[in-house]
Image 1 (cartoon, helix red, strand yellow):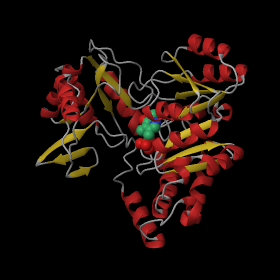
Image 2 (image 1 turned 180 degrees about the vertical axis):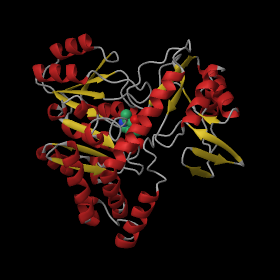
Image 3 (image 1 turned 45 degrees about the horizontal axis):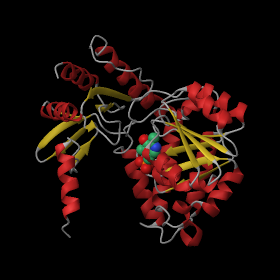
Length: 383
Ligand SMILES: *Cc1c(COP(=O)(O)O)cnc(C)c1O
């Protein structure tokens, strides 16, 4: 299939410095990735606790396959629900302090299934400007009226709450994926309580890392019991893949009946659910505690090293640090220079972030050594 319109779109992407392409890796070995005979220290993974390659999860997945086989065979409502899927959901509900939880194939699928099941035309969704694409797409799909407040802007959020009628769903992330900063969750919870709105918090970058047992930022701030809908991914700190929504039993029952991205897709392999149960135990236990300390300690060390760098490094309570460069081409060049120096830190450009807000998105994890952290800091300062 050849098409002039597609060709011109591709040309335009290249001309604007927005071209993206896939880079296959040959091997991932802790914080090191290898490809085509070269190797880099990886500062771009969301595997914050280093569980993806861990011997524990490899063994758990193998054990799951030998117990349950490779695939699930059907959607959850047909004949794809194995007991281990329910065990995982009970464990996640307990972890999040919620009545119930439902797992999906990915975090993206959680948003797409949940939001349109709960609100629709006549309702209003109020989103933080920097909310993840999955939340934005889900809001559009729902048919509700969409209102957006500037990032973390409480006054504007309150004004939107004042004017909204009918049912209102407020949506935010707890730790923002491209900026690494935190939402003022206590204040947002106060506002949504005052206005009788529902609140969905996407904890993709906080769960596993923050709060008691890694339960997330809402738990750390002591407001988790007031969050109506807890969205999370099993693809980042959990080291595997999938997503969950934890909420009241009533909401979960509704999702089982109405969430299209849950109903009309094949259940994730039961072996994966088995390995996720093991990952959750690790995260909640002393090993998880040590890994959290390692990851957050590495971020503190990186920020300490960059203290005198001129460039703005916003407060990063979790494990993400944006290195802002502005224009798309500069970010691309900076990423390539870092790559030549042996560090993998891909540039993030429009449409993932606003035009002119291109950046390197640097993530650190428990698997990095202090030597690797210090070397990255040096390389960043000589860009
Ligand atoms: C990664 C991410 C998701 C999607 O999770 P997946 O499991 O990767 O589909 C959702 N929300 C945020 C904020 C994310 O960063």
